[in-house]
Length: 278
Ligand code: FE2
Image (cartoon, rainbow, N blue to C red; front, top):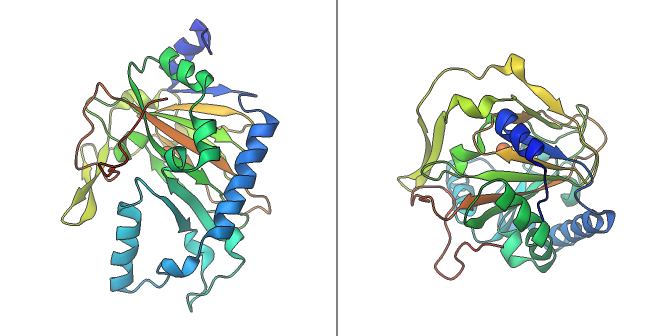
């Protein structure tokens, strides 16, 4: 049975996003939050370089670039003082966990592979879905970093573009704590850039230098349990969180296996853990 109506599909095609309230049960979002807390507790921050010397920047690039089939932890940029020490507890310093929670962690795997999501993705027209990326995003109180306007297809490209982002609010998201903002209809403006692997590092290939029409941004303030579906071409951003409340979210990105997933996308899988569907 369809998860969404014809009218909602039309809305998604028009706006490039769809807000589905009460998609996640209270038991489920509590389980994800508790599991994320456990994962952070078990994480030893000494494995990640924290100073921004040249050598350690390279190390952290590798830590990021090889995280496509791992569960790894990334700090908020403002987490450290000048001496490179955490300003607050580890649990209040992590920006996100990525990028294969949906394959490697039993709690996130169970949440990510449900009949409801499988049907929703089918309703959205993805013929042969692959779950390519998952992230737990903390948007910490006071230091939760800004994410500038971008399209997810810049980072997760298929030819032609097919990626859909599923953004689950695990806490209320408001303009105070850094909710998403999107440009309705902006997915029709075309892909502006690709983030690709090059020479052991990464670079942006720019196709269109025109600035985003930021005056058209609208805030997507949502309650805990809401699912926001984002077309991979939809321009969106989130502002810094200067409030005293965190804004946890879980995101899952789905691509169509019938499209080409290029070998220069930053996110790659080892042969032992290929992308899988639902
Ligand atoms: Fe995004």
